[in-house]
Length: 178
Image (cartoon, rainbow, N blue to C red):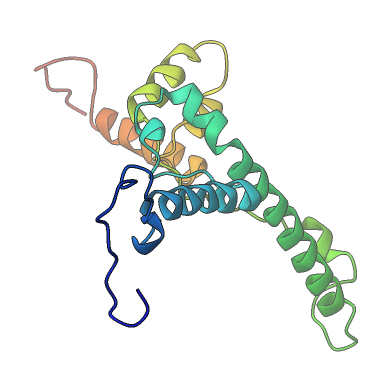
């Protein structure tokens, strides 16, 4: 076999002859399993939802929130750490001798973090409508993700109603002589 590179299969015991060692093992299935396992472990250890997962697309709103919960918790932790770092920075700035800020001005700073999350506007408007009569108009508008600044929105709404009633006398077509 070594000299001529040929295996002689002629003989009486050819049924018992095993030459599988010559065939190259197929590691495609093993490699696919390893890749899938590594992918799952990466998402599990990083606490991030696998958005490309087939089960992710067919989920309802509540189950999506549960799947994204770990990511939301990580974002909240980062927000707290970022706010803490900003507070330390403003405290240092306000304590400088030539600073125009007083020593306690940094305490009044509020940070607003906006997450880039998809929103269901239909569901939000239904919730806002259901809150009517129970909560203030400002609280209703806070529910809507479309409204960036609630106070500005209330002012625009008030201005619109003021413009609607400008010049209205309540007398219909009758003119009033002065």
